[in-house]
Image (cartoon, rainbow, N blue to C red; front, side, top):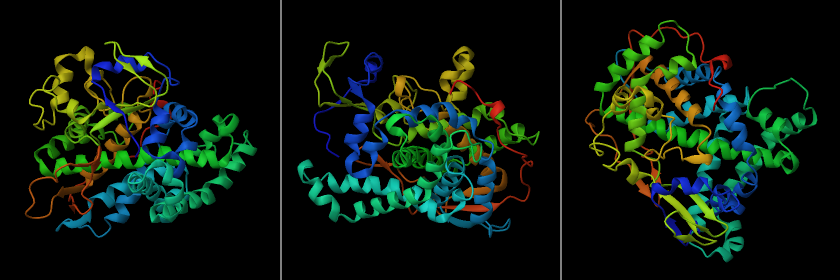
Length: 439
């Protein structure tokens, strides 16, 4: 990661970010620089905003199949789980599959979404991107072209790229060649193919864009769900309260986005978990391409790399009372205090005091998707299973950071026990007609 001249700006300068164009302050250039795009495939992936625009307009119209995949994963992973004893599972491995398979259902469809080999590509590519960045950061930039071909992580990354090309390029080429065909006209592969223009109408480019979206949709969401499950195990007093809310919204046997949005206690717990355990120390990374002046008169010069604090804002007493204490219903209380501003305190909302999904014109376009899929996961898990830490463990693992990136305890176990009385049967998840159109 070659980020010299890094400037960490106060979140009070968020409006300054929005008043300049991407040709002056670039999110895409920051991704290429931070993740050494020439060696990770991200230079090609970030050359246009196609993936950003497609996710922002299409992804939330796609929750219908998600609950089916979640149920399949739980049935397979917890097939031996009984009502009279707890069974241990690796927490990270479980949440990765719980997020990867439903997400892949929307991205690449059946049968590929259920293929373990595709899961290894989808999750392995992101892991090797980070490994490649960490390996190359120890070498001067001018040596990367000589060093990279000999690194094991680069070889594995290229292997994942090759496998992704083999899986997806034939599908994409067919859809680019037959834009009016309605066969398999659903999912991210189709949406990218339909919307691609100019240089983006290249199968290899679209594969890399899909993999870039995959990193955020799978790994970031899985990390968030992992933290939520850790907090539930550490504070089981919240579980019954959330279950009561689940019982209310599932009493009809039908889940819609409107019912998911009504889960205020669950949403608040998710947001508090995200606040107390942010996935990184910094956010809103941008590269300065042209000189520009901040509102306080400071001039940022080309080549500078700007960021804003995430962890410190999340723990700032200016914004949060008792910021270092976990208050699972903190945001329900805020909603009730000012109902007119209720929308500001949702898990998916963004503001100057909540930068987990970014801010401004480059706010994460998949934040509504993340909110809905995590709620579906919690409904499925807590309706059917009791969860807890292994015997003797009462505290959740501490959140650690390597550089500015959060690190998850890969060995942490979660114990599951099937509940004697499960929740109401759920017919389906949200349909496109139920979905908000402003995402």
